[in-house]
Image: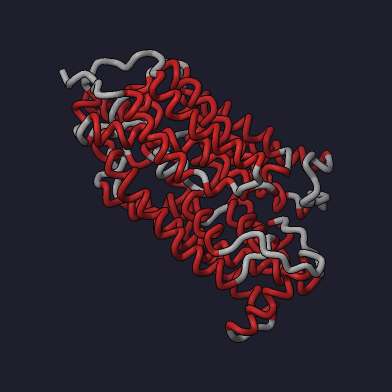
Length: 463
């Protein structure tokens, strides 16, 4: 092998965690369309759709709320996150370190990595509910916070080990896994929805609305109380991935994109996954309620009741395609905390934490609240990157890449982040306001406070 070949081989195996992604390592659009379709037509969909139904969301509100909210999410990826990623080509953590300093970013990375691990843990739980079916595993229910059987724990450990290893192999492997799995999973989700409609015995929209309302009545013991309306669904759809788009976590993904327009690839995830798949999963629960009276939204049995073995396999793979990139992001966060550490081992540790979290089914059952909380906590730091990029760096990557290193602990960033997040957490806890309403005001407030606290002092010019 020539020296040039050796250099190319070494570079191709690098994840470029601490430097801009070079031109030769950039990837085509198909990598992103497949990854987003796979990641978002995945494990969370089996939980979120049924949880909408259990919360009494009307059929009209779920359709309209998802149409609008998902559009806003796609626009956030395309016009807020992807343009910065395609110019700076840094991970979220490396980019933020150049603004906030290494000391502060370590705190943020720790919070980021742990929250991502908990999300991945919920997806490991989802996969385990399908793996456990052939073993007659007792299924956890909505009231279970702790593992309900030894077999559940063992299956979660096995599933988590596989997912952790795949994620540890790097972005190329994660993207390849998603590209292989996503087309098949999308078809199974669609099949699940169509078969569920047949099981419900409906032939028009009025019939579906009637069955939908009856399912809510059974699920809520006759109360038919809606705790989520149009605005709840819209804001949830927009900000359930707030940490990824407005929070800039997907700088780590789109830094490999040849063009910022690849941000449109997120629409594959939003409208295939967060629209079709959420509704299909909700219909699966409605069918289960009609056929058995069981309101327990456990993904494995629900899919098995509708399409049998194909549903079981889909739930297993769906959990993987969400957990894989989530653990990959968590690994990057942990790796950034210790300069010179191995991304492989950092990701493996993230996978271990996620696996332990997966043993506790409460992370899956409380998924709506959890994703709202992690968006509220993590997304505002993306405003620091956005406001710094356009107000301080003037959109010029050289002003960021060649500037003098930031102070170890930027207090302007710290207070701009903690003040709005602290206020939001108070209202969520004390006033019982849904967490998904807070990422947007926290993001805006954080960016404005950052500009105020940092004053007129601008970063050192490019050298």
